[in-house]
Length: 390
Ligand code: PMP
Image 1 (cartoon, rainbow, N blue to C red):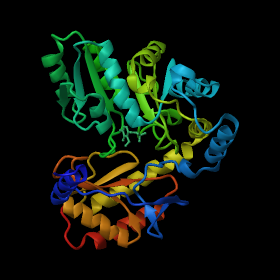
Image 2: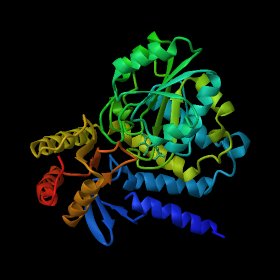
Image 3: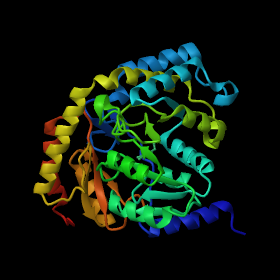
Image 4: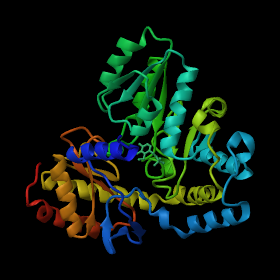
């Protein structure tokens, strides 16, 4: 009789034969936008530590200090005994940063999206759900089993059509988008989305995972100052350099999630060290305009250089710059050859991105220099000489 492991081996063989095998490789962030892998320091274009805060001493110091003072764990879920003064204080600071009435912490961005969407739908029985075709996997986890009307990426005319066609007869409507798309690095027009949502009496949820800390006034994201965004989600795992996530919105939204979001109610509260790092990042991020301007300039420099080499960048206008390659094997081979030149660039392939759009996803960090971008651009032609798709 086949054991469970035999069955897994069979399933894994199928993954391998589809060319989709993935494995974990240890790496460690290093100063100056570098990463150490296999004992080698590479220029890191793969991680999401956009402002370089993951290794900022203030974050590590406060994480340690809060752990020393309050303990390593929160001890219970929020509704039992897991809500400390620190949770409430950090949530009040997040709401002030985002300009919303209230905010609520979640363990991670993935968990926030997976937990919040079912709770929103529980408040909107029979709602029609409209999602951008490129929303993150965590949104799909939250919408598992829910019929989605998926509109063409960032195409608000298509969204309006779908709202007309499928939204009329339904008791409620929910639109789900990101403000910066994780694999294309392009932005949504949040103000236009909010207007469309209002016209169709739809609720709007925006994932600001990649905008938080990087874009908008004081780095507060692209929803800050825009009226009509009902649910704003963001994570502390990217530009904030730490871990954890938030939902920002009205006090009623917060109350509803506390009462209805299973993934919030039945999960242990974030520990003090995580909160300390978030608190320290909240001290630093609003004042990091120089880093944000530097990141924007690096993005422009990289896009101009890629365009000159014939790479399409999928509408990127942020610190995430894809270089489209096309085939999966070509993207993997290009990433490998860049690694040989001392550059770590992630090859992103299906199912993370649509078939035929495999790419290098180049994530910029404020700790990169213009010379790092130039070195990447100089390495690309050599790295891609042995068979480039674009
Ligand atoms: N939303 C988007 C758009 C993301 O890119 C990610 C991270 N890959 C998440 C949510 C999940 O956030 P976290 O890493 O904090 O779980």
